[in-house]
Length: 314
Image 1 (cartoon, rainbow, N blue to C red):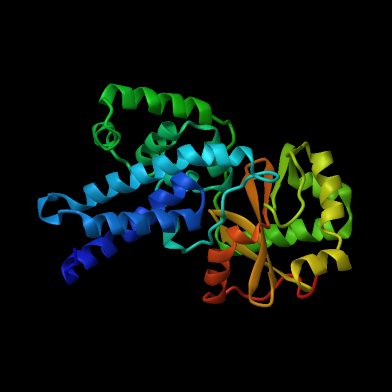
Image 2: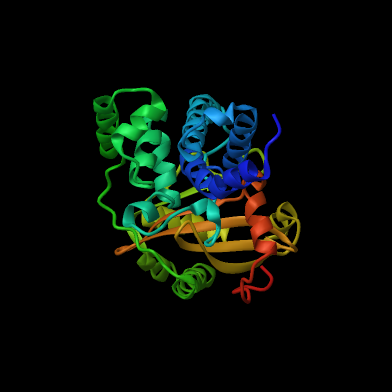
């Protein structure tokens, strides 16, 4: 069935919100785009004259598409090469969605998106719709075709699984650059104690290279171990440059609400290192170098102002 201009505009008016929901549910900008496009195809094929509230209908369709994908993704994660991390998204991208409340900002942090991988699919759906988008339990229950009391129980379980005593710190571009500069200066200088001082005692480092780049098979935990690894990782070599496709420049940015190091070769983003900043220091370092998870970041980078690099040629 063909769509009228009004019906196309109606869908486009909800696309940003749908993408933001899908990104939080799937942890992948690419998968989120695909899910929203599938929702559009469902909208095109639907008997639209019988849909009383299009936004609610589209949200339900998208939610169930994501729920199905989460179920299959759990099996794919078991065969994923190395460690799996979410796809980072730069500040200003509509895929990040609303960020007016602490809960909304928390829900798009790389740390929280990673943590949500431990949730069962329905737990993740209920948690995201409730915490980040403010849906009532009866509305979520209707989308998932469960009872309201069951929805409340699922939400409580999800909250328990995600409980943490860390208070994350949100930053703007100026603060992010200062943090990244300080972090890079300490790492490049080789001053071990300075770098340790920037980290929390239980700091963690995780890298995701997919099939493309070798990374550690498990997270490194503890400031001392993380620093030893960073001193080796930050040291430039011809082998690393060849693997990246050239000598990269390193910039600072804000990604998923936190400071990030962005490594760029030519017009390609080849790596994003997100720093989880807490009141006690840097609690986690999430390095994304899987090129399949940097395609949207590369497009956004090419069309944005990002200032001068901190390191012009690494």
